[in-house]
Image (cartoon, rainbow, N blue to C red):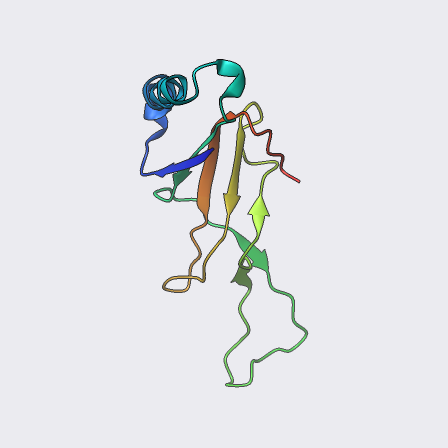
Length: 124
């Protein structure tokens, strides 16, 4: 079972882990009985309310664009781009994923926190 949840603050992660995951496991107990027959559970928190933005340095040999304006120095990261090293927490499984077009010219990728990973999903 894969469950995602949005609009959770970092300070609520322990409460989510203790309350919601416990409730799901209790429901598994009631439904499946023996813990050996429980489905695997992966629980991911999705955060969109953050101030992190990513840009790619734009390199173009033209001094002007077609409409006469200078070319941009930086452009938004492409849709589908994943950031899962360097700036993310080293002890937790978390990553940024840009899954949509830029709104008002600036991307805001979602930030995913994996609280539980019984399915054993990997970054690859």
